[in-house]
Image (cartoon, rainbow, N blue to C red; front, side):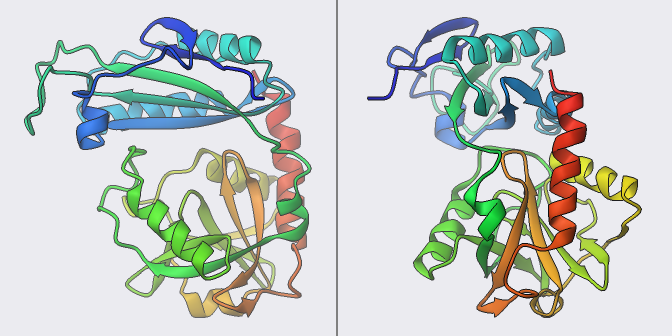
Length: 287
């Protein structure tokens, strides 16, 4: 039987069974909130500062006047790791515009207290079956709103896309807009052709991945050729290699897209090298 977790809710550490949020919370009624997920390896946080800075950016883009103290937030993360005995896994953080006491499309007064929730998830993130076997993906139309650079809790369409992929016997979906791949349901997308890594350039069309930034830095350290631009499905079908990056997946190999085998159908050397260096470099800086 799973042990009851300790979670953080609005300044208090409580049992998950005791953690409650109002039905009038705007996160519940309007998906008016943002989130971050930080990965834990060997009890340490990977990329914490990057996630903290992106959280601040997301809050600012939604005009949510929430003060984020980096050191206090780090202490909360570490305390949750300690209380829940997390060696490998993730810490989920969500901030909403809070509970105005009723439902109204207009924002509540600025002094409305925000809702902040953090909880842990045990999950093996190192030495996984996925990194050895790879993933199969299918393409779907990208029907999300136009500000995908903000990490909001509006995740219904990615969930629908994930379920469509599973119904087709795949593991995930890559979303396509105007003929070009944007990203996966919860990850950034890459292809490799003739030694060159291609991934979509940063814009409002994709999430500015913390892992993406770190992996591209690793590619630079390895003197790999990187081209940041949109790529088509047709390019992906004939790629030598493909992979996706995310906080909990690091670099996950893609071995099939829409039934097209990528490369030799096995995880490729570029993604493998990037994953190894990513872990090496980020463990040095883990908190």
